[in-house]
Length: 426
Ligand code: PA5
Image (cartoon, rainbow, N blue to C red; front, top):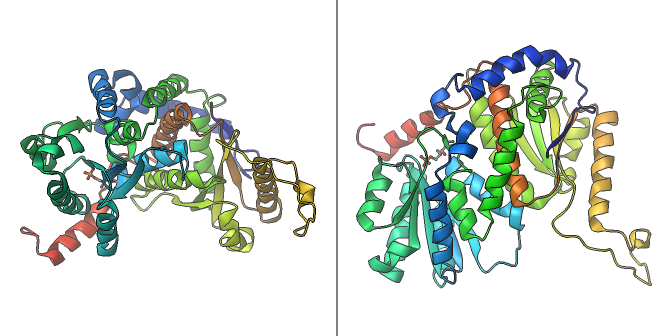
């Protein structure tokens, strides 16, 4: 399902020479014995996810059919990026949807908040607040404001069907508040951390509300789980990717640019950045994850990649079949001199841009390129790819002896901010 090609990776070590390390790491993942193993719940989730709760998500989306033209998701980090990446990848940026999805709770920007409030004033809103801890300040503060908006617009009783909370099973202020107000709640499992949670109700509820076929997402997830049981480095492409990253960092590359050629994959790049960056960037180690969308960013970052300091390698996500395509029309006058492309598909042009760029970056620019290939941007592929990236992330961190599942560094800014805000106890 996922192709991996390191032939343009300019690797100075053989991927296969890491087999012993990978076998060790594979055990740490599949036997849930590695560092941070209390957060390895995602590993067996494709098999042991809560089927009753999954059915409840499907029932919710059915119940709300015909209600709500706007799904407002309130969350940040792992409680935001995955859902957005999924919906944009699967439906594109301007889908012919009955509903649109917008996001809040991921910033303190007052202008953004006020514009969201103005924007949804005359919309028919369904609000999904997502927070595992229930105490994340960005999300909690936005939810306080949105809850007031919803209650004024619809009244408390109607809010019971319009507000959905995804949070911890039993603990936390959001859980208490949701129970008190009578909102339907969905659970973020204890043993799955935020950036690995898109395959739980965190991602599945917004996806389902947007009409994404979440059964297909789970089918892809299960298929990926099955394929990832194999520790053979010549077969397991996720492990090949994990090892290639380590080899490239050994060669001195400290930045990885995740590149796609589809604007609807931009948020996938943001999701990937959190997954890699928060998992690996600790103990003074890790590769800085960066992302770009080509050919757009070739007109901004292209110069640096081609001729700037040799700090980065590119990981290019290719898509075999675009969701849609356009035939380039013939123009009698040919004033723009583009008739040499008439009759061709626009996706073909995109693919030629990819090939030409890769050759320029690798052969002329000496920038390593590794390629991850997916078939399409549909539900099954999304599910498959999520699990694939989780395995690759865990493995690449374990190869560095890093705990992929904690994020102690994130607390530092919060402490400083709480002190400045006058939060009791800080
Ligand atoms: O990956 C993580 O754990 C974080 O990005 C969290 O998802 C993020 O901080 C939001 O936390 P919470 O869901 O508790 O509001």
